[in-house]
Amino acid sequence: MLLKVCCQPPIKPTRRRRRNKDVTPDECCEMFSNKFGGLMFGFRGLKATSVCGAIQRAASRSGFSWAVVCKQRELWQQRSVGTGMQRTGYLAEPSGCIRSASHTTVDPGEVKRFQLLANKWWDEEGDFAALHAMNDLRVPFVRDNLLNVQRERHPGKPLAGLKILDVGCGGGLLTEPLGRLGASVLGIDPVEDSIRTAQLHSSHDPDLCNRVSYRACTLEELSGEGEAEQEEQTETQFDAIVASEVVEHLADLETFAISCSHVLKPGGSLFITTINKTNLSYALAIVVAEQLLHIVPRGTHDWEKFVSPVELERFLESNGFLVQSVQGMLYNPISGAWSWANSTAINYALHAVKQDDETMDSSTPPGDHHEATHS
Image (cartoon, rainbow, N blue to C red; front, side):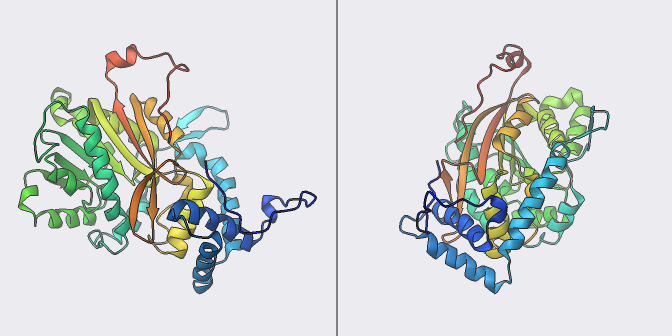
């Protein structure tokens, strides 16, 4: 439960409260920064007024208008009502029937954006600094969950013998550490320049030569190859798939879920980290992180593409997955470190397992199944 810190005197009971549409820019800033100080920073002695002041100073230096932010947020909410079904891969026809909106996970705009950043992946203090820091959480998250189901133990190389697919690998920031843990990892990404960057960087480490490989392709292309080689499907399937900070950039979640199911072995694990679709995630992931503090480049994220844990869980379970856990994550821009959190209001990590046919047949009837606990 979030505790809101009030930096203004208590409002008298007789005073009429304004509606959200009447909130002033200063109050909008205060509302965001109160949560920013209490939730994002996690400081015990930090006053909300000091955080508000810091954000206001950054806003004034950049010529930023909180009134524009509030108005833009309202417009995005209105647009999301009409585009919500398109985000999930379907569109409503005038007749009321549903049709597929896309059969690709690739958004051309996203490819173009990451094409411009392809040579910056391994700058640990640059645009991808937060992703470098996230390895402190996501690598153990993948490792520990896989070890829970892995019977054999390999000292020093705990993931030896496992085949892992890194979807949207970029420059290989997560691919390489998984390979160093002993796994055989294939990183795929539609941006060819990012793949070249990943290949060049991994070539400097002899230990990765036989463990890490890369391909410039999409997930659905890889899935299609597996379908064309049904007799060799067991060999082409993976023990685990990781899609870290990827689903919020995809054009079609339905195609993503179906393709993951095709290339993953029964009983295999799917690991996802992404951003929740909440008011707080808009304020922090877009307004603060992109437009004020410049933690990531402006325009990196589109709030309409964010997905809640509940929505993502339903997507996965409708395609043969069973969600095991959902855990909140928080980034501290002062220390540059990530930590686990009880709240999933901003970032979260999800672990799901692909069910085999027997498990699905014997599973609890729809409506009575127990959903994973959301932290």
